[in-house]
Image (cartoon, rainbow, N blue to C red; front, side):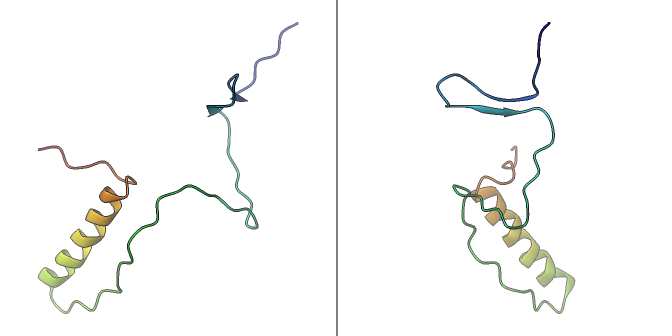
Length: 72
């Protein structure tokens, strides 16, 4: 008889693999994630101004490593 698990921590504890569902309860905390610079609420009154605000948000997400960078 063998047992195969989807979620495991490799020997030495350096890597944990989640192959199933990772559920984070409301009262839980997560540490070690990047802190994003604040993005102010948009007060844009033109499409061009809204595009500028949106692009600023995208840049912050990319700089924090939460979104892949543009490929030239």
